[in-house]
Length: 348
Ligand SMILES: C[S@@+](CC[C@H](N)C(=O)[O-])C[C@H]1O[C@@H](n2cnc3c(N)ncnc32)[C@H](O)[C@@H]1O
Image (cartoon, rainbow, N blue to C red):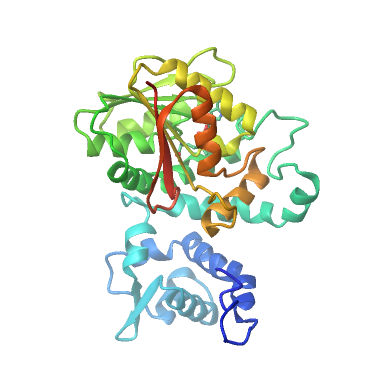
């Protein structure tokens, strides 16, 4: 993704990296169209397809069927064996509907919601205003019950967060945690995954009322209703967060908000934690030099499109935690789709 890959070397500069950057959306739209046409779910568990067979199944012309299959193979989403296209391991694991780590909700949200909005990115840069909602009519992205948002946003977050939670659970020490409070826990993806990893753990999802309903459904489907509860609330309007938890998780929460709001949320976490309790901030962290990494820097621009926040650096989070009195603040790095690390602090 880095354009200046050849800078500082003897190699002559070439526009090839720019060609790759400019055509990035071709690759995404190929994936999105294949997902929209249910290609990967159709191929799962079958002996694969030829372009003629796909044309017949979808009722489309053989020309685009051939081009779509070739495109997906080129992107590593399909493989070709004995003249037939089958799912690659990546597509089979993450793009088949209903599989435990189905990433399709994220693909769908990017296609339906963020792709059109990113078409107006220059407007966002010029005006410092979000693109997917109107700040003159709403207080935030989450204000109101937009049916389109309800249909895709939390399903997308669930797709993204399930696997991120699995990685965070192995990277961050939760051995001393008995009760987890997941502030703005969305669809409960983290709680479900972390409770599966840690049999002694119970969790509370603190969320806006309409999202609690989504979380409760996911918790029930996971068979974890005995161990994960939902509490409806608002981390700005409510004077305090629920007490009685020894770890508080903030996953992809603080990047939605400006610094003052982040400090206010963290202050309520401090108040709600007992001595010895810890707070975990899980995000795609921008490095302290503010030069990347690309996934975090691009997510930060996505926060321009969707919110009034941005992706912050570990130094910023640690300063806010230190100011509140948290101790042993540190960054734990890992690699996941929805986070590249967590900043952790302990209340003395
Ligand atoms: C980007 S999502 C992250 C969801 C989840 N933590 C995850 O990582 O999958 C942000 C979440 O914050 C919740 N949220 C926004 N404003 C809130 C508020 N005032 N009180 C409680 N939750 C809120 C939203 O409903 C949404 O689920």
